[in-house]
Length: 134
Image 1 (cartoon, rainbow, N blue to C red):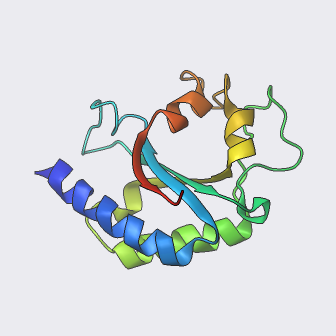
Image 2: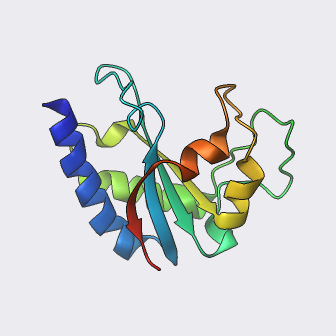
């Protein structure tokens, strides 16, 4: 039942993101939800919002591969993701973890995971595609 609710919220997320996120390239769900290891009581729902403009990316310009806290939310991206969460207004909307990245940012994340759990970039790009503009 919970997965059905999340799927409905993901559909709503796609429709909202298409209007709220500038130059949206694609949306993917990844991590435990995508790998079927998701626990509805405590797990988050990781969502990649790939954008075509670097001004909204979450990666800081000082990104280093060996920096464990490389994910730095840009204020504009934070505002957008807060608005998406507000508009979804669902049972699991507070569980969405948004990663607003450019294609180049995702490449920087390949082979790295600031949380120490596998290849972060690969996990994102192998996530289930929800939307693609091309």
